Amino acid sequence: MNRQGIQVAICLMTICYFAVQSQAKTITLRYAQQNPDTSWSTTHCVEPWLRQLEEATGGQVKIQAFHGETLAKGKDLWNATRSGITDIGWISHGYFPGLTPVTDVISPPALPFRSAEKGSEVLWKLYEQTPEIQNEFKDVKVLLFYTSESYNLITRDKPVKSIPDLRGLKIRMTGGPPTDMVKALGAVPLLVPMTDAYISLQKGVIDGMGTPWEAIHTYRFYEVVNHYAEVPFPAVYFSIVMNKNTWNRLPEAIRSAIMSVGGVEGSRFWGRNFFDAVKAETLEKIKASGNSAHIYKLSDEEHARWLEIGGKPIWSEWTRRMESKGVSNASAILNTTIRLSNE
Image 1 (tube, rainbow, N blue to C red):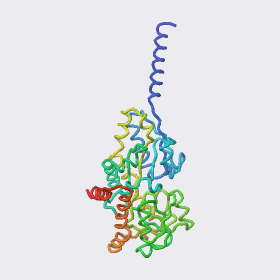
Image 2: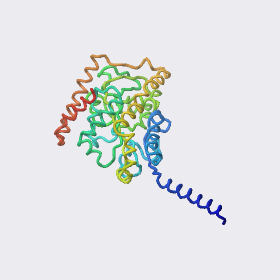
Image 3: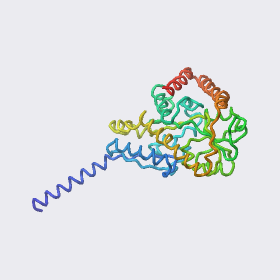
Protein backbone atom coordinates (compact mmCIF):
# COMPACT_ATOMS: atom_id res chain seq x y z
CA MET A 1 0.00 0.00 0.00
CA ASN A 2 1.40 3.41 -0.94
CA ARG A 3 1.63 6.35 1.40
CA GLN A 4 -1.60 7.90 0.15
CA GLY A 5 -3.45 4.61 0.67
CA ILE A 6 -2.09 4.34 4.21
CA GLN A 7 -3.28 7.87 4.98
CA VAL A 8 -6.74 7.07 3.64
CA ALA A 9 -6.87 3.89 5.71
CA ILE A 10 -5.81 5.75 8.87
CA CYS A 11 -8.44 8.41 8.18
CA LEU A 12 -11.16 5.78 7.77
CA MET A 13 -10.06 4.02 10.95
CA THR A 14 -10.19 7.32 12.85
CA ILE A 15 -13.66 8.08 11.56
CA CYS A 16 -14.85 4.62 12.56
CA TYR A 17 -13.26 4.96 16.00
CA PHE A 18 -15.00 8.24 16.74
CA ALA A 19 -18.28 6.92 15.34
CA VAL A 20 -18.09 3.98 17.74
CA GLN A 21 -17.16 6.27 20.60
CA SER A 22 -20.07 8.55 19.76
CA GLN A 23 -22.44 5.59 19.73
CA ALA A 24 -21.07 4.37 23.03
CA LYS A 25 -21.84 7.73 24.61
CA THR A 26 -25.47 7.68 23.48
CA ILE A 27 -27.75 6.60 26.29
CA THR A 28 -31.18 5.27 25.36
CA LEU A 29 -33.87 5.67 28.01
CA ARG A 30 -37.36 4.18 27.82
CA TYR A 31 -40.33 6.41 28.60
CA ALA A 32 -43.76 4.84 29.18
CA GLN A 33 -47.19 6.42 29.55
CA GLN A 34 -50.90 5.67 29.44
CA ASN A 35 -52.11 8.15 26.81
CA PRO A 36 -52.00 7.32 23.09
CA ASP A 37 -49.44 8.84 20.76
CA THR A 38 -52.13 10.85 18.94
CA SER A 39 -53.58 12.49 22.05
CA TRP A 40 -53.42 16.25 22.62
CA SER A 41 -51.26 15.79 25.68
CA THR A 42 -48.76 13.64 23.81
CA THR A 43 -48.39 15.89 20.79
CA HIS A 44 -48.47 19.22 22.68
CA CYS A 45 -46.66 18.30 25.89
CA VAL A 46 -45.03 14.87 26.15
CA GLU A 47 -43.21 14.69 22.84
CA PRO A 48 -42.03 18.34 22.94
CA TRP A 49 -40.69 17.79 26.46
CA LEU A 50 -38.92 14.57 25.51
CA ARG A 51 -37.24 16.47 22.67
CA GLN A 52 -36.22 19.18 25.14
CA LEU A 53 -34.64 16.50 27.31
CA GLU A 54 -32.66 15.07 24.38
CA GLU A 55 -31.53 18.52 23.30
CA ALA A 56 -30.52 19.49 26.84
CA THR A 57 -28.12 16.53 26.91
CA GLY A 58 -26.63 17.50 23.55
CA GLY A 59 -28.05 14.35 22.00
CA GLN A 60 -26.26 12.07 24.44
CA VAL A 61 -29.65 10.82 25.67
CA LYS A 62 -32.19 9.38 23.25
CA ILE A 63 -35.71 8.58 24.39
CA GLN A 64 -37.56 5.48 23.26
CA ALA A 65 -41.20 6.37 23.94
CA PHE A 66 -43.91 3.80 24.62
CA HIS A 67 -47.33 5.43 24.40
CA GLY A 68 -50.80 4.01 24.91
CA GLU A 69 -49.85 1.43 27.57
CA THR A 70 -47.69 -0.51 25.11
CA LEU A 71 -45.01 -1.17 27.73
CA ALA A 72 -47.06 -1.10 30.94
CA LYS A 73 -50.62 -0.27 31.96
CA GLY A 74 -51.19 3.13 33.57
CA LYS A 75 -52.13 1.47 36.85
CA ASP A 76 -48.86 -0.51 36.79
CA LEU A 77 -46.44 2.27 35.92
CA TRP A 78 -45.28 3.01 39.46
CA ASN A 79 -43.99 -0.53 39.92
CA ALA A 80 -42.84 -0.72 36.31
CA THR A 81 -40.61 2.31 36.89
CA ARG A 82 -39.33 1.16 40.28
CA SER A 83 -38.44 -2.27 38.90
CA GLY A 84 -36.79 -0.96 35.72
CA ILE A 85 -39.30 -2.18 33.15
CA THR A 86 -39.21 1.45 32.05
CA ASP A 87 -36.57 4.04 32.84
CA ILE A 88 -38.96 6.99 32.98
CA GLY A 89 -42.60 6.58 33.96
CA TRP A 90 -45.69 8.76 33.81
CA ILE A 91 -47.45 8.28 37.13
CA SER A 92 -51.10 9.11 37.71
CA HIS A 93 -51.29 9.06 41.50
CA GLY A 94 -55.05 8.64 41.53
CA TYR A 95 -54.43 4.98 40.68
CA PHE A 96 -52.55 4.46 43.93
CA PRO A 97 -54.63 5.62 46.92
CA GLY A 98 -52.54 5.52 50.06
CA LEU A 99 -49.21 5.39 48.24
CA THR A 100 -48.33 9.08 48.64
CA PRO A 101 -50.81 10.36 51.26
CA VAL A 102 -48.85 13.47 52.27
CA THR A 103 -48.50 14.52 48.64
CA ASP A 104 -52.30 14.21 48.45
CA VAL A 105 -52.37 17.64 50.11
CA ILE A 106 -52.48 19.07 46.58
CA SER A 107 -55.74 17.27 45.75
CA PRO A 108 -58.39 18.26 48.32
CA PRO A 109 -61.27 20.09 46.61
CA ALA A 110 -61.28 23.78 45.80
CA LEU A 111 -57.72 24.75 46.62
CA PRO A 112 -57.17 28.33 45.44
CA PHE A 113 -54.82 27.80 42.48
CA ARG A 114 -56.62 28.67 39.26
CA SER A 115 -54.60 26.84 36.64
CA ALA A 116 -52.76 23.58 36.15
CA GLU A 117 -49.55 25.52 35.60
CA LYS A 118 -49.87 27.14 39.03
CA GLY A 119 -50.84 23.90 40.75
CA SER A 120 -47.82 22.18 39.21
CA GLU A 121 -45.51 24.93 40.47
CA VAL A 122 -47.02 24.66 43.95
CA LEU A 123 -46.53 20.90 44.11
CA TRP A 124 -42.88 21.07 43.05
CA LYS A 125 -42.18 23.75 45.67
CA LEU A 126 -43.91 21.63 48.31
CA TYR A 127 -41.74 18.68 47.34
CA GLU A 128 -38.58 20.75 47.64
CA GLN A 129 -39.37 21.94 51.15
CA THR A 130 -41.30 19.02 52.67
CA PRO A 131 -39.25 16.01 53.86
CA GLU A 132 -42.44 13.99 54.37
CA ILE A 133 -43.26 14.31 50.67
CA GLN A 134 -39.68 13.58 49.64
CA ASN A 135 -39.79 10.38 51.70
CA GLU A 136 -42.80 9.13 49.73
CA PHE A 137 -40.66 9.23 46.56
CA LYS A 138 -37.46 7.78 48.04
CA ASP A 139 -37.60 4.73 45.75
CA VAL A 140 -37.54 6.77 42.53
CA LYS A 141 -35.99 9.95 41.17
CA VAL A 142 -38.60 12.66 40.68
CA LEU A 143 -38.03 14.70 37.54
CA LEU A 144 -41.15 16.87 37.84
CA PHE A 145 -44.72 17.04 39.13
CA TYR A 146 -47.79 18.43 37.48
CA THR A 147 -51.46 18.84 38.36
CA SER A 148 -54.69 19.26 36.47
CA GLU A 149 -56.97 22.21 36.86
CA SER A 150 -59.98 21.53 39.08
CA TYR A 151 -61.89 18.60 37.61
CA ASN A 152 -65.20 19.12 35.83
CA LEU A 153 -68.18 16.84 36.40
CA ILE A 154 -69.51 15.21 33.23
CA THR A 155 -72.65 13.07 33.21
CA ARG A 156 -74.29 10.94 30.58
CA ASP A 157 -78.02 11.44 31.17
CA LYS A 158 -78.70 13.63 34.19
CA PRO A 159 -77.56 17.25 34.51
CA VAL A 160 -76.05 18.15 37.87
CA LYS A 161 -76.77 21.69 39.04
CA SER A 162 -77.05 21.06 42.77
CA ILE A 163 -76.02 18.54 45.42
CA PRO A 164 -79.40 16.73 45.34
CA ASP A 165 -78.86 16.11 41.60
CA LEU A 166 -75.63 14.28 42.42
CA ARG A 167 -76.90 11.98 45.15
CA GLY A 168 -76.82 8.29 44.29
CA LEU A 169 -75.02 8.73 40.95
CA LYS A 170 -72.11 6.40 40.22
CA ILE A 171 -69.18 8.72 39.59
CA ARG A 172 -65.74 7.67 38.40
CA MET A 173 -63.15 9.49 40.50
CA THR A 174 -59.54 8.96 41.46
CA GLY A 175 -58.58 7.77 44.93
CA GLY A 176 -57.72 9.77 48.03
CA PRO A 177 -59.37 13.16 48.77
CA PRO A 178 -61.30 13.20 45.44
CA THR A 179 -63.06 9.97 46.43
CA ASP A 180 -63.75 11.38 49.89
CA MET A 181 -65.41 14.44 48.37
CA VAL A 182 -67.69 12.40 46.10
CA LYS A 183 -68.83 10.36 49.12
CA ALA A 184 -69.46 13.49 51.18
CA LEU A 185 -71.66 14.90 48.41
CA GLY A 186 -73.78 11.74 48.37
CA ALA A 187 -72.59 10.10 45.16
CA VAL A 188 -71.05 6.64 44.79
CA PRO A 189 -67.35 6.86 43.81
CA LEU A 190 -65.92 4.16 41.56
CA LEU A 191 -62.26 3.61 40.68
CA VAL A 192 -62.27 2.96 36.94
CA PRO A 193 -59.11 3.20 34.81
CA MET A 194 -59.26 6.18 32.47
CA THR A 195 -58.82 3.82 29.51
CA ASP A 196 -62.05 2.02 30.52
CA ALA A 197 -64.08 5.15 31.26
CA TYR A 198 -65.51 5.65 27.74
CA ILE A 199 -67.06 2.19 27.55
CA SER A 200 -68.21 2.46 31.18
CA LEU A 201 -70.05 5.69 30.35
CA GLN A 202 -71.42 4.28 27.13
CA LYS A 203 -72.83 1.17 28.85
CA GLY A 204 -74.06 3.00 31.94
CA VAL A 205 -71.68 1.28 34.32
CA ILE A 206 -71.00 4.79 35.60
CA ASP A 207 -73.32 7.77 35.40
CA GLY A 208 -70.54 10.30 35.13
CA MET A 209 -67.03 11.19 36.14
CA GLY A 210 -64.75 13.89 37.33
CA THR A 211 -62.35 14.82 34.57
CA PRO A 212 -60.21 17.64 33.17
CA TRP A 213 -60.78 19.21 29.76
CA GLU A 214 -57.74 17.33 28.47
CA ALA A 215 -59.26 13.90 29.09
CA ILE A 216 -62.58 14.95 27.56
CA HIS A 217 -60.61 15.79 24.41
CA THR A 218 -58.21 12.83 24.45
CA TYR A 219 -60.77 10.13 25.20
CA ARG A 220 -63.61 11.71 23.19
CA PHE A 221 -65.97 11.70 26.15
CA TYR A 222 -68.04 14.34 24.33
CA GLU A 223 -69.34 11.43 22.23
CA VAL A 224 -70.94 9.64 25.20
CA VAL A 225 -71.92 12.36 27.70
CA ASN A 226 -74.46 15.13 27.40
CA HIS A 227 -73.86 17.34 30.41
CA TYR A 228 -70.87 19.28 31.75
CA ALA A 229 -70.70 21.05 35.09
CA GLU A 230 -67.89 23.30 36.29
CA VAL A 231 -67.79 22.46 39.98
CA PRO A 232 -65.33 22.85 42.88
CA PHE A 233 -63.94 19.37 42.39
CA PRO A 234 -60.34 18.55 43.31
CA ALA A 235 -57.40 18.71 40.97
CA VAL A 236 -55.39 15.53 40.55
CA TYR A 237 -51.65 15.20 40.35
CA PHE A 238 -49.02 13.29 38.42
CA SER A 239 -45.30 12.76 38.52
CA ILE A 240 -42.65 11.99 35.95
CA VAL A 241 -40.17 9.75 37.71
CA MET A 242 -37.06 7.79 36.81
CA ASN A 243 -35.87 4.42 37.96
CA LYS A 244 -33.40 5.11 40.74
CA ASN A 245 -30.73 2.69 39.51
CA THR A 246 -30.92 4.22 36.04
CA TRP A 247 -30.55 7.68 37.54
CA ASN A 248 -27.58 6.68 39.68
CA ARG A 249 -25.74 5.24 36.66
CA LEU A 250 -25.99 8.45 34.68
CA PRO A 251 -22.99 10.81 34.58
CA GLU A 252 -23.44 13.91 36.71
CA ALA A 253 -23.45 16.16 33.63
CA ILE A 254 -26.33 14.17 32.14
CA ARG A 255 -28.27 14.36 35.40
CA SER A 256 -27.87 18.14 35.50
CA ALA A 257 -28.95 18.43 31.88
CA ILE A 258 -32.09 16.38 32.51
CA MET A 259 -33.04 18.44 35.55
CA SER A 260 -32.55 21.63 33.56
CA VAL A 261 -35.85 20.73 31.85
CA GLY A 262 -37.34 19.24 35.01
CA GLY A 263 -37.90 20.76 38.42
CA VAL A 264 -40.15 23.79 38.74
CA GLU A 265 -39.83 24.89 35.10
CA GLY A 266 -40.56 21.41 33.80
CA SER A 267 -43.52 21.18 36.18
CA ARG A 268 -44.93 24.47 34.90
CA PHE A 269 -44.40 23.33 31.30
CA TRP A 270 -46.37 20.12 31.85
CA GLY A 271 -49.22 21.80 33.71
CA ARG A 272 -49.54 24.51 31.06
CA ASN A 273 -49.20 22.31 27.98
CA PHE A 274 -50.81 19.10 29.22
CA PHE A 275 -53.92 20.75 30.68
CA ASP A 276 -54.37 24.52 30.44
CA ALA A 277 -53.82 24.89 26.71
CA VAL A 278 -56.43 22.32 25.65
CA LYS A 279 -59.61 23.90 27.07
CA ALA A 280 -60.49 26.08 24.07
CA GLU A 281 -60.17 23.20 21.60
CA THR A 282 -62.18 20.89 23.86
CA LEU A 283 -64.99 23.43 24.01
CA GLU A 284 -64.99 23.45 20.21
CA LYS A 285 -65.36 19.67 20.19
CA ILE A 286 -68.29 19.91 22.60
CA LYS A 287 -69.87 22.63 20.46
CA ALA A 288 -69.56 20.43 17.39
CA SER A 289 -71.28 17.60 19.29
CA GLY A 290 -74.30 19.85 19.84
CA ASN A 291 -74.02 19.95 23.62
CA SER A 292 -72.41 23.33 24.25
CA ALA A 293 -75.69 24.57 25.77
CA HIS A 294 -75.31 21.87 28.42
CA ILE A 295 -72.24 23.36 30.11
CA TYR A 296 -73.26 24.55 33.55
CA LYS A 297 -71.61 26.68 36.17
CA LEU A 298 -72.84 26.49 39.74
CA SER A 299 -74.43 29.57 41.26
CA ASP A 300 -72.41 31.32 43.94
CA GLU A 301 -74.76 29.98 46.61
CA GLU A 302 -74.53 26.40 45.34
CA HIS A 303 -70.74 26.68 45.01
CA ALA A 304 -70.57 27.68 48.67
CA ARG A 305 -72.74 24.70 49.65
CA TRP A 306 -70.43 22.28 47.81
CA LEU A 307 -67.48 23.76 49.69
CA GLU A 308 -69.18 23.47 53.07
CA ILE A 309 -70.32 19.87 52.53
CA GLY A 310 -67.67 18.37 50.26
CA GLY A 311 -64.75 20.77 50.52
CA LYS A 312 -63.64 22.08 53.88
CA PRO A 313 -64.49 18.84 55.73
CA ILE A 314 -62.13 17.00 53.36
CA TRP A 315 -59.34 19.44 54.22
CA SER A 316 -59.94 18.78 57.91
CA GLU A 317 -60.17 15.02 57.40
CA TRP A 318 -56.89 14.95 55.48
CA THR A 319 -55.18 16.83 58.33
CA ARG A 320 -56.69 14.54 61.00
CA ARG A 321 -55.71 11.41 59.06
CA MET A 322 -52.13 12.55 58.54
CA GLU A 323 -51.73 13.52 62.19
CA SER A 324 -52.99 10.08 63.21
CA LYS A 325 -50.24 8.59 61.04
CA GLY A 326 -47.57 10.62 62.79
CA VAL A 327 -47.36 13.60 60.44
CA SER A 328 -47.51 16.13 63.26
CA ASN A 329 -47.05 19.12 60.93
CA ALA A 330 -49.92 18.16 58.59
CA SER A 331 -51.79 21.39 59.30
CA ALA A 332 -48.68 23.43 58.49
CA ILE A 333 -48.22 21.52 55.21
CA LEU A 334 -51.83 22.27 54.22
CA ASN A 335 -51.45 25.94 55.16
CA THR A 336 -48.25 26.14 53.10
CA THR A 337 -50.10 24.63 50.13
CA ILE A 338 -52.83 27.27 50.43
CA ARG A 339 -50.27 30.07 50.81
CA LEU A 340 -48.26 28.96 47.77
CA SER A 341 -51.48 28.62 45.76
CA ASN A 342 -52.37 32.24 46.52
CA GLU A 343 -48.95 33.69 45.66
